[in-house]
Every structure is written in structure tokens, then in C-alpha cells.
Image (tube, rainbow, N blue to C red):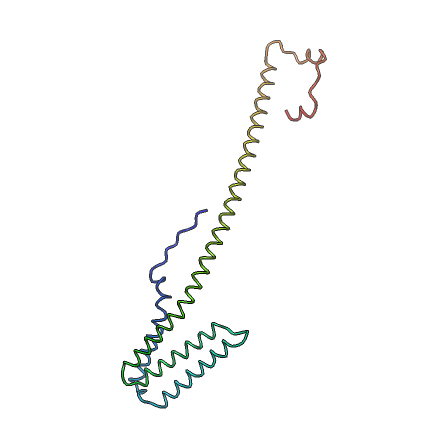
Length: 201
């Protein structure tokens, strides 16, 4: 069983690795655009971002708490909270230094969290590939055994056919010999072949 060889483009392989940096960079750029459009030193805009970030963090805390906590929802909520906080600082601050510092910190945290997910995903993928390879080897072994069994049955059938052909040829040859008289053999009282043997012949 030959598996088709698939080639994935390098951009497809790189896209998940670049996602955290792209997300934090997008938030930083949007925050600086917001800063240039009147959010700089705006207490109302800063208060709005604080409320939104706190709400998202609270939602993440509630989602992760209890036995039925959902890690995906909690992670999304905490990421949204961090993004809102970064956007709020980038929009409120008058210089780039604090915004870039928070962007670097947010990117490092995002990659730290993503690395854990990538490691778990890689372990699951390797385990799945090993299980698939084991099942494939088991199926290949069964197929080889069945192929050997079928080949043996075919060889037995060929041997039986060759024997029957040789026996038929011998009987035909004996019947064509000069002086052969089957009636004389029957009258001599020679025993006849059993009916089962005649059917086999």
C-alpha cells in the first residue's frame, strides 16, 4: 500500500508559528492609529479599555473555574483581555517606548502559551502516526498471510488439474494401443474401479 506523497508549502507550515506575532502587532498598530486619531491622554477612552479588559479577564476566570471549565473559552477571553489592555496603553500613551515594551511582553507570553499547545499537538500527532503505522503493519501482515494461503490453494488446484490431465491422457493412450480390448478385460473378471473413483477421474 503506497501512500500518496503530499507536499505542504512553507508558508502553510510557517503560518501557525507567525500567528501570535501577527496578532500582537495588529493590536499595536490599531492602538497607535487610535492614538493618532484622538485617544492620546483621553481618560474616557482609557477607562473604556480598562472596563473591557477587566470584563474579558473576568469572563476568562469564570470560564476556567469549576469542574466544567472550558480551556478554549478561557484562553480566548484572557487573550482578548490582554489585547484590549495593549490597545488601551498603545492608544493612551504619547510615546512608542511603553507600547513597544508591552507589545514585546505580550508577544513573548503569546508564544509561551502557544508553544505549550504546539508541543501537545506534536505529541498527539506523533502518537497517532505510530498507531496508524502499527495498524498498517498488522494489515500488511494479514494480507501477506492471506496471499500465501491463496497461492498455496492455487498451486494445489493446479497440481490436481495436472494430475487429472495426465490421467486422462494415460487412459486415452491406453485405449488407442493396438490389441487393447476393454470387453476382454471385463470378461476376464478384473475388478472394476469404485464408482467414487470413476467420478473423480
